[in-house]
Length: 467
Image 1 (cartoon, one colour):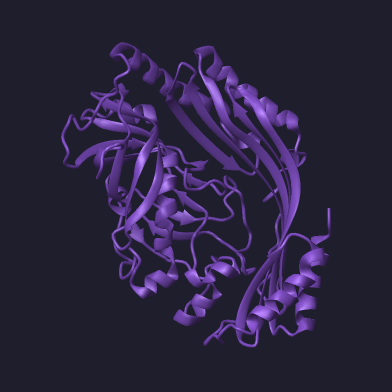
Image 2 (image 1 turned 60 degrees about the vertical axis):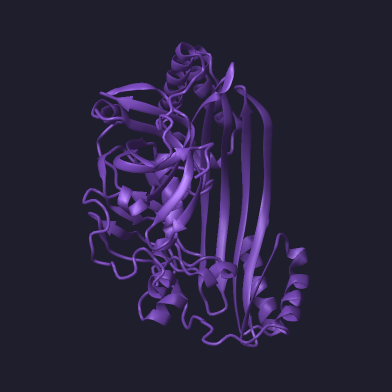
């Protein structure tokens, strides 16, 4: 493995020598092992290591970004930057930091798990076996993936900021299927800094239960699923019990609403609403890059130390997020949410959302649902339809179930929804335990979110109908 501290310093030295007035560089180097599973068996074991060198320079009043994957390509990339700078317009009010950020000091084990760092294939195989032990006796098959990796990351800039840390990461995606009918499917995902933090059997049982509900009902009904619309075409509202992956996906698309740039532009849901009640009193949302349940990140993409920030407390909007350039422009402080240089034109975004959970189980939510309620596994292809309202659309995926009179009736057709995320979070009646969860919209950094029951969620059609 290369010494990436030396590489970062070489980038700064060479760009300064070439004539850059300011430079910043992020170097990451890592190893990983991943096993993709089909029909309960590994079909694609992959392993490897790699490096990424991303850097940004101020050249004649213009910001130019570049990247490469080895020191050999560095000089050529630097020359390309200066060549490109000739034709770029000068930027007014170009932000350049005037002092280094404080150095982050980490205790042992904060971002790093010793066992995970060994990258032992036996741990991946053991995890696969634990899932199979739950699914296989029920006649179901396990597909998906399990992975772990370790990384070293260094950030430096030409005014003296220097940050570094080592980290580990792990992820498990359990897709369960009925081999006789692949339309019978279920999903649970989890990610964090170590495989040992995952409740593997609990997640696998959740998948197995959903598969069983589908198989038993479809056997009785001759393969026909319940149509919640009953042939009607107008939108309908149902109470919903949504698994963590659903809320993680909705929040991933909604997270731009906390962007300080959009807040001041007046295009954010939170514009003019800080200090106001915008969600239910039982909803508290933080951005916590250093949560031990996630994949900790001690500094942002410009080297600013990260820390826990309250975004919504008891349903009241508290903060939006800034990088250093936005903070200077709007007369406030950076919250440590800088994006990579090539994306900073967009503003700043929270990437480590945590929703404070409760003590309700999904089983309790089901028992207490007397009116028709939909229990939803995950959501797919989520898109924003109205930014200021926080409205989003998408479809359900991998299992939806009708619940009535406290019992699961059977699987429904998949549905298309259009709903305001803040409004849905204003009608939450139950919250479960928060878990680090991936969604169909977030495949690397987990959000730590609970299952939640919300009333009156708006659906517009079954998924194969035109909206």
